[in-house]
Length: 347
Image (tube, rainbow, N blue to C red; front, side, top):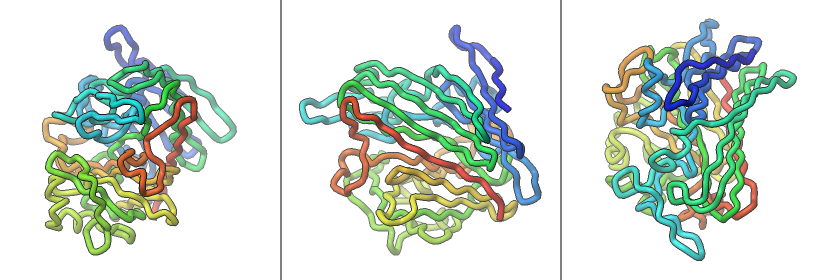
């Protein structure tokens, strides 16, 4: 089933919710504002369907959202120090929307714009493709860029996000989705009850403004070594200086091991829900919601630290190109493509 409904109007634009539902009842509710995941219903080990992403109680809160709830962020996900985008021939100065720095595409970016879309049903798949045009110089980025993001829900319960882009000038592009997952369902518990595993080899060291210093921290013998199943409550109780810098949890880019499967595994012990996140990308920012404030009102509860976890698969900053992984540097006319798949199950 694919359903489209207008749920509000903002500034003369209809806010549209597009619902994809498969034969098993897995349901993704998406918004044309910010190309967002609003809700995502999957079963637990007892077959009970609940929402496993954080959602605002009042849809109006998406308009002023400052935590990128479920949004596609870009043109570049993450922080760019001092907004300096340096190409071979020029330094481009990006908008500074987080103090002296550029975050998640700028003041408006891709997360606070209306996207065009179209839907289609293929054999065993429900698809909605969103489209956005980004002008040359928008938020300081060079090049006219055309963006396409497709959400594909199959009959096995996999939700795939397919990202495509092309620019007429050499630029930087690194797209991700900023959903906050909480597998307890309907925010019954925080993520301290979750177990995580990811093939991180290094993390980027952060300064007190959460800007990468340029130093790589090997994960060995640190709380960032989550190559085996790791309880998040054990991470949060650790006193490592980098966890303290990030307000008591992860807010770090994990560089995946070159020869490992590019996948993150998440599990909620009590109800048995599991999530496997597979990606074409060389790493992910894992953010454990350390700074979520109680001023935010979600559907089931107010905001609080550790209410959800973001698994932001993305390209490396260009400053780390010597690692030999894909970076956000995209040549003029050369297609950008990334794919991330979310597979839900029970254990």
